[in-house]
Structure formats: structure tokens, C-alpha cells
Length: 126
Image (cartoon, rainbow, N blue to C red):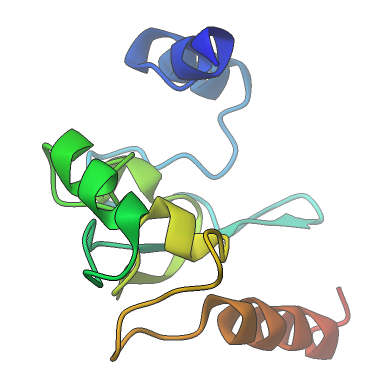
């Protein structure tokens, strides 16, 4: 776990982005390149660390959240390539459908969002 947290830290993230700059925004809260060579870049994320009182992980996400974001990463630091949407009512665990699939009452279903995104990519021939 320590290695994961270090890899997600600012220093390691900046080094990674310098080594692999495609899709990384050039300004603090902008969008990066949508396509470089034949590779397309896009992102979507949540911006709500606590979505339901029934989900115990929401409390830890809320406690660790210092910036507008998903409880792990700030909204602007999660932008990559074409930003499809950065306002889903999700925390980081909701984004990957963790902890029994619990989500907020008015939150989008992350599984459905990924399915729609995959279909969109398929329709583009990717």
C-alpha cells in the first residue's frame, strides 16, 4: 500500500507525466491532446467524496478530501485528454463500482457509464 500511495504522490505523478506527456493538459485545469498519432485520450471522473450515508467508504473519502474531487485526486489533476465529464456524483471507489456497488441516490451508474463509453469507442472504430 505504501508503494501505491507514493506512486500517486505529486512527485511521482509529475515524473510519470514528464516521461509520458501525451494527453496531459498544458494548463492547470485544461484539457490535453485528444489524439496523438493513433492514440485517443479522454477522461471522466467524480467530484463528490461522500454520496451516501450507507457507504462506509464515503466517510474515509470525505476525511481524505482536501480539494474538489473524488476524495483521492483533485478535479483538475484528474483531467486528461478530452474531458468527457468531471462532475459525476462519485467518489474514487464509486468510479470503479467498489463496496457492494453502493452509490448515491442521484448518482450515475458507473458500470453503465463505462459501458456507454465502450460503445462510443466501438462506434468510432476503436
